[in-house]
Length: 109
Image 1: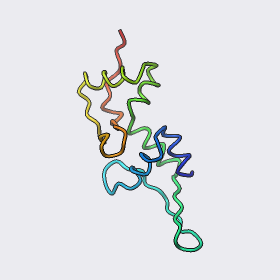
Image 2: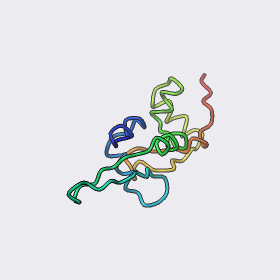
Image 3: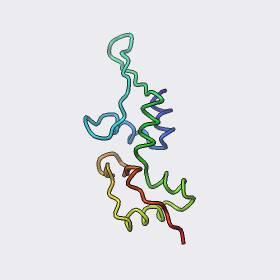
Image 4: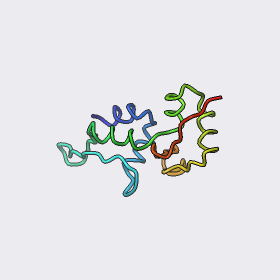
């Protein structure tokens, strides 16, 4: 799938998607790079498996808010109270990514 489709499916801004693609180690999106006809252009494609695996391993406060039908600030408060640290900090990619396995269930009052 195209970069736009992959980033859209992950519900992340393009700048964040490219930041994940450019990372050398740790959590990243690993694209298939196709050389253009003139050798100067590079086309990035992402396999369905790469995108699905990333979605199952990492999440964001916005995705948690959607999943639990709460506001984003409620999801962030829940993460802070549970002392869940981001696997990737906001400063690195423009969005804080959390390991899905580290997220405790929401206990809504």
